[in-house]
Length: 275
Image (tube, rainbow, N blue to C red; front, side, top):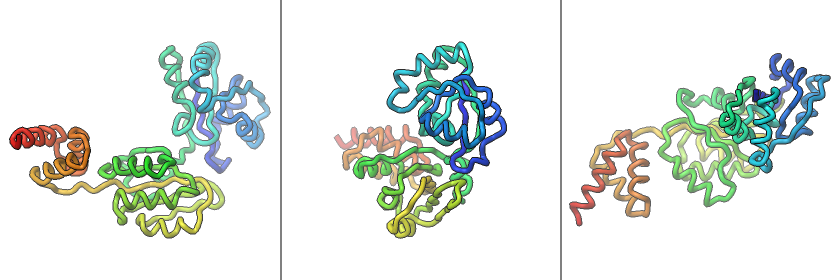
């Protein structure tokens, strides 16, 4: 089988007893960075020296079938540098291939920067979406954020410290300067810090320079009470600005709670009536 093994995201004390036991007996260990994994084995005082195979973004597509076939014959443990493999880390391609080949996949649950940041953010946790890293290019990042402006669920992002200030500024521009945000830094480590505030407040803080690994948790959009007529007018304005009708109806539906299909049909009817 394939065993996805969650590893500490900073504090070695978060390594579970089950993780240690599996590593002590593993014959094959697939790792995002074998050097990082070797250091972890040493830090956890694991005497076992399993066969190490590198699996990362650049070779996963080529190695997935081979590793899935190997897992049909023996257990292989899959690890990323920190946290759960496949979550913004290599592993998804391998798991998909294993499922296609009928190979069993299981996991050793453990540390997760996504869930920890969400839990301590102070923002709603009942419904959330993980969006990974925002695009590096400013134009692509702004486009991505505009598409998420009406998202009602709490959103979790990863971000580079060097791009944090500009990303927060773009979040404020897309979502509104008063949208609540929690920036979580160096989770589980010595200098763990959580900064909470609005986009405008946090940009001012981040512009002074921030170090470490960053998780940004953003409050979802509040749904506004909107009449069908006003919602239709919003759809028509978006279409006039160049948005496809289907996309415009979906965006306004997410913001208002009205039916996307009804808005689409109403816009079509209005267009026909004006023809």
